[in-house]
Amino acid sequence: MKFTTYLRNGEPRLALVDGNDLLDLNDAQPKVPASLRAALAAGIDLQAAGQAALKDKAKRVPMASVQLAPIVPEPGKTVCLGLNYFDHAKEGGRDKPDYPWFFFRAGSSFVAHGQPGVVPSVSSKFDYEAELAVVIGRKVPRHTKEADALQYVFGYSCFNDMSVRDYQKRTPQWTIGKNFDATGGFGPVLVTADELPPGAVGLRIQSRLNGQVMQDANTSDMIFSVAETIALLADVLTLEPGDVIVMGTPAGVGQARTPPVWMKAGDTIEIEVERVGVLSNPIVAEAA
Image (tube, rainbow, N blue to C red; front, side, top):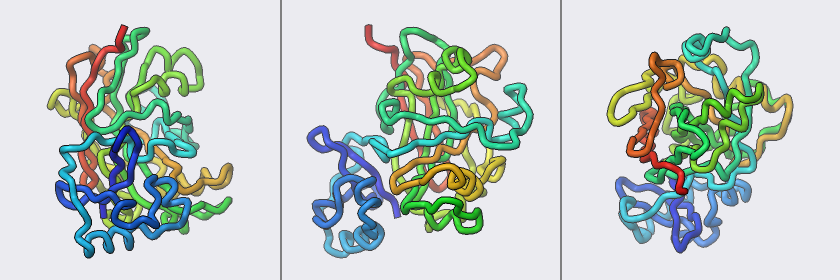
């Protein structure tokens, strides 16, 4: 099953995706909160609610007619992994890490499918990163074991961890270069975990800049799997419904090329994860 978040009167709303249409779940099933995060936190069986909406022939609107929002517009936590594909670590001159390079992203950095990624006025070193996003569906108990971790995943989406490289390198902690406004592409849909292989392994992942393939890998190449990552995080903190984990990027990023390739105004960047979807963002310059 696929879900999305769209804007109605400027407010994000949870919707079921049915082909090229969407159904507002709160309209169809008033017991379902209009927010994905709130619905998950309330323990709502969203797949059952979606099936009921389909049977009741709830009103549909063309997905192309609405403005989408980030899948989880205001997650409690967004934990990202750096260097989680060996070839990407190698192209950056680093060894395979023994422990994930975790950093956080703020919700204010998110941007929806179809909305512009913004080249900041203070830098031109604006890079792309194709990533798989994991949305947590249920509270993950502390010290959850790897073998039990996947039961807490609600679904998967596409993410573009657009990075301002010179700011990223100003400090050993990468956070500042990963949190510029409108640099975290997230969407367009969320595919429930039961629709994909366990841990979303074996899926092709690509980035395409103006139609040219820049990254082309497979999620099986991740150093730390989704299950292992959840278990490692559970040793430290409590993952809650609506939290997001962004699983790192493969080789082929712009900064590692000779000469470097930076995104600029007028470009279009696409991120595709097999069986999940295609996230597309035009690139614009920050307004003066």
